[in-house]
Length: 392
Ligand SMILES: [Zn+2]
Image (cartoon, rainbow, N blue to C red; front, side, top):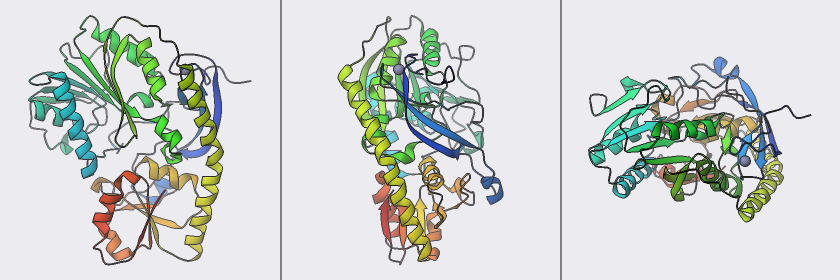
């Protein structure tokens, strides 16, 4: 018997969620830094059971329970240190400002992280901003003296929502929530009759994860994996009209622009749902092959005493190193200086900066996110050693 609740869709509340892939024993907090190897080895583990909803095309981790994940100030997921990611954030901000005439307006961001994006969109459009995030660190905000942007170290709710808001931004939050529908309903209720207000949402793109077989995008902290079909269905059910829907950041994200509307009953697009179902089956089939082939590659690296590093100390690197527990990798490279000298949860590799490679001279660099290949090559090509870049 299935425990009640686990297999109820987080997107549309349909009870018909079907299991298609299980991954057990991965870190519960892929982005929590560990100061010592011992702490990292003892980090909490959890199981992922990916289920697919045939009603709305949503994917969720049926084993997800919110309790172990703590978004505290030790939570380190800033991508701000990559020039490529900065370019993406800037073009996103410019696009939103132009399309929504965001000059001298009020911007609210839910899950504003360390404040990078809110500061940017306020600076570029001369806007005022309020950001909500329990992980915000005042001391690390280079724009902390800017009194046009304030941050609240709390979760956004009806109680603390600013009364004036022209654009509500919410990036990479929905996938972490146990009840995304309740959350969107709460936002809709805060908006009330202010129909001129715009909303920008961004989530990781599960359509991309499935079709590109991105197994390392699976993390425990994601309760949901939104497809374009499921996020649109959710928003309509919560009385939002989707005005723009696109894949962004090389297909890795779904970008949604929406505005409040009256309730719309949305009928599922049967063809789109069938397409997603076929992708979930292929994704699960190839998973074992991928794991076997990487395990044998890593075993070979270990038996030849070759030096290989993983590039990318974020969640993809954490998942890769924890699904493949064959050894062979001692170091993980990351350009975020706040991660250097810390350890990957559970698999416990040390995170180092790119400069370390000049001394370590790895023969192989396993790149977690192919979008950064050129950026990585530019950093290592003149270090004076021969190396091969492989994408994970
Ligand atoms: Zn559903």
